[in-house]
Image (cartoon, rainbow, N blue to C red; front, side, top):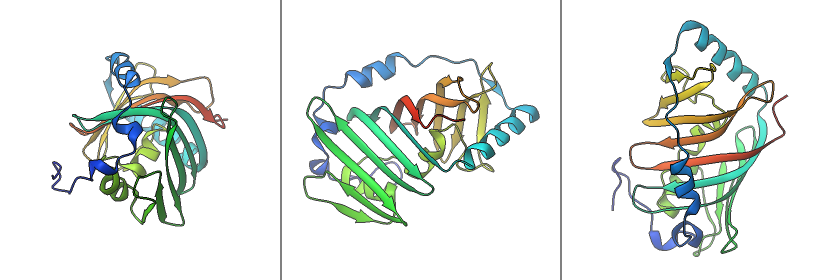
Length: 217
């Protein structure tokens, strides 16, 4: 089966059980708690403030978060806990389902990606998104998501931005994805999202951040 991009979908039989068999109260929770934010078009002042904020975050390439994630392709979906550690371009992303105690891990080091937790054993490659889609069937723009989860643009020259009443990004559109920010943590010097809802019209990734580690200074 092919997806709407013409790419081969992954083999569902190789999908970790917690992504296919877990009853998804978190999916329902995330859907229910998606508000309709007030959005306003970007003006020069808002764009300048966003660029300044992104520059400050880019100067902090090492970060981590813990929270909850739900993934869906419009038909199938699942949810679990997520722990994401980023070190420059490298990352260590772990998903777990407390009920089934199953886990999945994707690590990138020096451009090499390793995907663990599959029934058929570990898979490796050099493209995180392609490896994830091939192995699991999920379309997740991993590299762009690393920027989006911090409320940053992945492609500053080709992005549509809308801002909320508080001046923080409310919606970001790029690479064929729409990213909504229903809630922000404004308790630190550099605000970080508490909720990140991304979709490309079919595939969805919804993330609720319980804790940023370390918090922005």
